[in-house]
Each structure stands twice: as structure tokens, then as C-alpha cells.
Image (cartoon, rainbow, N blue to C red; front, side):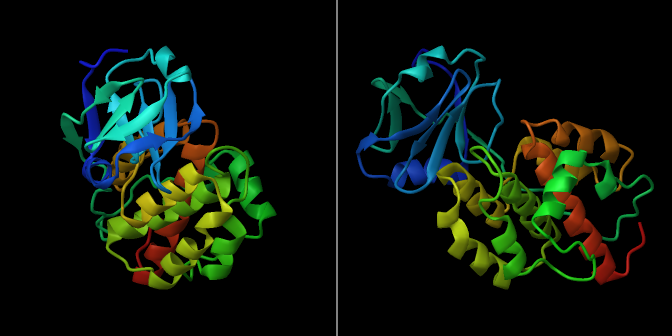
Length: 256
């Protein structure tokens, strides 16, 4: 890994680094394509092109990040250093979810049943109420946050997808937001950070592309691309988005 590698990041990631005090940071997960560290209770990622471009990460323009497997991390003057090599942000990327026009007709809408069965079975197993007539509530959040395996439990992925679509639609969800924030200690640091990102309307590029495609002929293809992210993370995000869209359509009296 070279100090000259191009580094990109969402604006809030750069500002968090600039505000962080100098000092070493603990690495909470590392692999060939990504590293995640604890930035004072917020998970900061360093990801290559082979990893999901989560909205809480520095993005490097390379596929091979083998050096991350043993790298140490520290912040100096607002810049992350890995093994003493600075990763200064040179380009700001937009992680905000696109605006969603709820009035746009959907000639080929993607339905919840199109999500992989494993995700639908998980949602059923936690007792999530699927009625499109209402928003998710604090009891639903309690069923989801921290439920599932991995760095980003599937329940959190579903909730992120639901929250982000409401941000895209400009619909407030204050009661649920407060419940989610109170439950963040129940899940992993990375997943808690991604829930925080969803609350701010910050999403994966594949999620943004899906939202931009809703109501267009590209919606099914973009849904499939989102569902393909990770093991089940993308599919969980898609399920949450579709559940949210069904609720929003019902509230607005919009037919698919």
C-alpha cells in the first residue's frame, strides 16, 4: 500500500476524522479487502474496490489491500495513518440517498417476495409485523436491532433499508429514530454506525442506484444488484426498502 493511493470519503467521514483527537485507534475487524477501526465509538472503515463501499469508510482505488491485515492505525492532525502512512481524503463522494418521488408510477415494481427466501424467513422468525398500513414502531426496532449473525446483523440491514427510504421520501420517523438510537449498544460497532448513517440518509452506492431507479424500467435490475451485495446485507437492505415503499404507497393511496 502506498501513501499516494487516491482516497475518497463522504463528507461526514472526513469531518469526523478532522474532529478526532490524535492517538492510536483499535482495529475491530481486518481482512484482505477492508479494515474497520473504532473512531471514538464510531466505526471508520478503510475499503478497497473489492469491498462494499459503506458510507462510513475511506475508499481506496485499489483491489489489493493485503497490507491492512497487519496494519496499525492512528489519527494525526485529522488524518488516518496506517503503519505511519497517511490516508488523506482527496475526493468527497456523495453518500446521500436520492430524493424519492412517491407519485412516480411503477410499471414493473419489485415486490418483497423477490427478496431471497433466507431474508424473508429471518423476518418472519423475529415476528416483524408486515402490514403496509403503518410505520415500523419501537417494538419492531427491538425485534430487529442486533438480530442475526456477522458484522452487520440482518435485522439491522432491514432496518437500515427502511429508514433510508423514508429519508429519501422526506418522511420523518422521530419515534422510531429515538428507539433505534437507544438500541445501538445491542449491536456491533459497525452495524450501529451504519444505522447512524441510515438515520442521516447515507447509503451504499447500490442502494442509492436502486432508489434512483424506482419507477423506471431499471428498477428490477438495480434491485438485483443491491441484493447481491455481501452475503445477505444487500438483500436485507432491499427488503427494508420494499417494506417501506409499500407502507408509503399505502399511506399516500398510491397504486403500484
